[in-house]
Length: 283
Length: 349
Image (cartoon, rainbow over all chains, first blue to last red):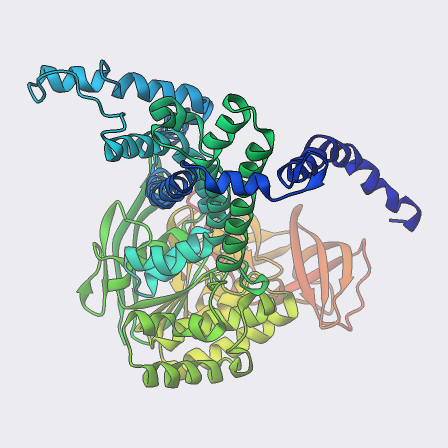
């Protein structure tokens, strides 16, 4: 291609760059500035207020706890499901379609659906009552039952967001030629060895994408938590929402937002480092 | 070391019969090529022997043990895949060592055997590299070294040279033959390339339409094809088939006559291009030359015998012009007679 036309690629990506700049980069800088300023000057006051709040340490703990429990479970579940789906001879599309239905449901709607199941007068209690296992309505989602509430949120998150990991992993599995597994089988590898020694290492790029996406989203978890537990289970994004809307303190809300971003970036960096595939090891 | 007995193996994919009752015995240390066009079932048969595919009926016996229902890893064999299937995330050393690691061999033994296999295939210099940094020929060597490192009783190869360029293929073919002879491994080698099969194999099984048309040494298969398909598939140019009628043990082509088996009337004369020689005086079977192609080592003449397409190989210095009619001398002992109705060779008198 002649050198004269080298501006064309830049022109082609210009609209998306401008779009990103206007709707992402500018608000990002504004938010960071907002979090570090009071009035017109630089100040750490917003961060001090955020860290000094009663719910702050709880929100940090809860968010990390949720992420550390939900993401690994989702990866294990998705790996198992993806392995099974790729082994199906018939009805694979139908199974995949059913498994990915939750992807099409907004997280708030998903939270409300689980609320209908788990609240005092919900389906779970009705079923347990009908079976004679409980005497009357039981509260699962209150402050008195933090572990039941935590478990309910984990369950709802697993149901809602495992499918995105599944989709990424299935796409990744399909990229691995079946000869690798066959060769391993010929040379004596048992199924579990084939999975750990061949499939998992070759799936690393997909695992990395899935983990980054899911972990970043897990640190932003909000709607499901809010629907099921309200502020009984404070999380970082929920606190940002409260500071922004209930307390009308935009600076503290921005501080939360920046904190979430910093955590997400750190997690992404960790994944990029730990799960990197060296170029010479690519298929 | 082990022999392989393939006993009436049938493979059906739904209503399609990919293999129809294949039986074949490969002797201990023998190199047998499964040769045939794509879709003839040769790769399916190889995968059934490997255990990667399950036969619909029939048995596979390796070294006296019925392995028909055993997992691939319990069959004591190694395989070289068409696209090599060497593991991209492992170094060349670990690739070659893979089978030994699965056998839980001690580190010293792994190292010794990997180094020996690497030396055999001349890849000692690349053991620390990853496959992505290797050329096609080098990957091919790694795949063969990985298979030989486990010192398998049986080695299966699925078109191992077909991804290499022509020159490299010739080089690897020669080397492969030397290496495998030295190892003494019983080998089944799938290929669609007749020169590969002829050059490498002790015996060739020519497959067509899910059946073995003929099993024999390369020379037997070339000189005395059992069917019209084998004659046409093997050899370049392929065997000529000229329709003739046989009356009272004599077939008449133009003014020439040839003795023919009198059991069948409608015959085809199977004639190798190099088994006919130009007669000095124009006598013999009349051949109308249409095209003359000088190939260096010989002249390739394309024309017709009795109105039917034929290709004849002549000495490079022969003076033949397109458009002329020449006479061909044919040794009756070197022709093959094919029954037109069945496509099978008629027994020689």
